[in-house]
Length: 399
Image 1: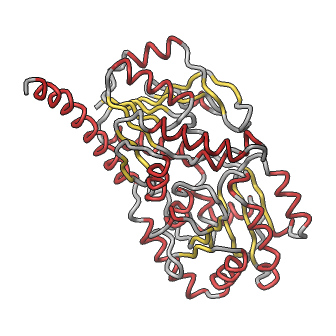
Image 2: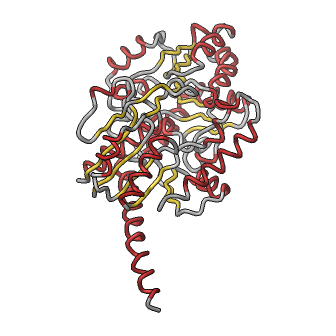
Image 3: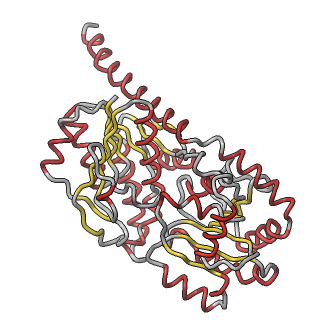
């Protein structure tokens, strides 16, 4: 099968969409398929450009300055049209998504789309709080219009499927959670010496337990709420360090908040790290913490569990059946519940050990191989249906 993946973000960028697309690209190729990726150029792209990884000219996106927008040229468009794709798989509702749908429409191949992002949660980047309800309504209508252009739509959770159905989407929807490399995200991967070096790099004093957060430093990730709760926890458990891995528009503000709370020495905001090294930062954690209020799956939670970290996160329907209270972590509803659960985990080593084992068992269900096979099944179903429809119409014309 010849597959084209079109995405507005790809490796070496670090985010859930880029990671999902990379895992899919790698696994489908291992299964013997020809896979081409089309994505904007980003920092470090030169090292990875190849015959199957096509990085397009791009410029910084004015609304999200840590993201780039591609400008497909006629040469790229002609090259993609000549690929004779069996499937075009878009992972964006914007520039690269439009390029993918253009190619699919002009070649007649199957169109599959993965809906990664709930855009109504991001309208404040445009409105800055003015007319936000109108913007959210437009985001919903746009998502409905976009998804109904495809033969199949893939979503990572039932929460997202329900949301799209509420929008009015009628296209077939497959629930396929993104997977991960379980050989790489593993508690056995890094030695004690490697962990000690990483702790020193992050400025973690010897003997301190680590609350870990990995992700974009932006409003939707709600990291300021973790910082608000942290002084109370630190008062009861002074041997705890909050380590935040990531970059984004709120980095300076979060550093200022930690300083104002008197927690600067116990909060390490260490910036972005290369994706190929990110597993060694999970390896130094004791608990993965998050207050994000905009997740369709929360891939970092799964990576954390694969490394043996209990997950303590804001309650979200996308995590139902994944993060289970008292089993592999806790989903909290307010700051008091967050602080209480965190204190329970940190102060009870036996409980933490049991949560760790259960987290590993949960993560084992989400391998990259299983993810790719499910996506391939969705492709094959879409191809079969597309082949059936003309035959069905032809038969009906004789009736």
